[in-house]
Image (cartoon, rainbow, N blue to C red; front, side, top):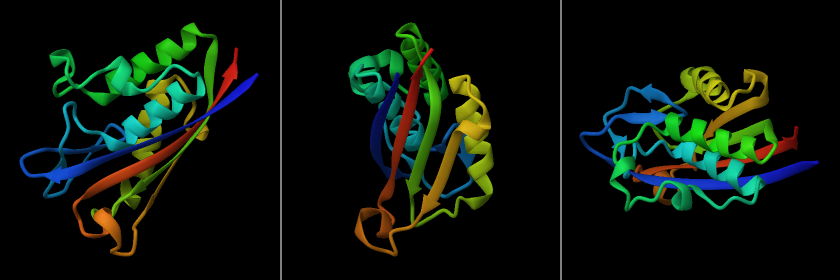
Length: 158
C-alpha cells in the first residue's frame, strides 16, 4: 500500500532570527518568524508526511499554543513525525519539496538540506528532493516579505 500527502507552509521574514531551511542554517540578513524555529521547508515536509498517513497536521501535533514548542528545532519535530508514521506501519518512499524564495539564493544549500531531511526521516538522500525557485518578484515572496514551501510525500506500508 502507498499513500501520498501534500504539505504547504509559509512564514514571514523577521529581523533578529536565524534563517533555517531543511534543518540547515542559511546566512541571510533575515530569519523567519514563527513559534518554533520557523523552518518553512521542514513544516511543509511534516504536513505532507502526516497528510499521507491521514494523521492531521503539525498544528494538531505541535500546537503554537504549547510553550514546549517555542523555539523548537524542527528537525526534532520531523523525527517525531517519522516516529508517529512509523507506528502506523509506514516508511518514507520519497519526498519532493520546493522552496519559494526571491532571496536568498539557495542552490548551494540544496544538498545539505536533502541530507538533513533524509537523516531525520531515516531515509536515504536519494529519497529526498529539494528544489528552490523564485516567483519572479510577484506575490509576497517576490516582494521579499517571506518564504513558502510545498512538499509531497509518498509513504509505503512496511
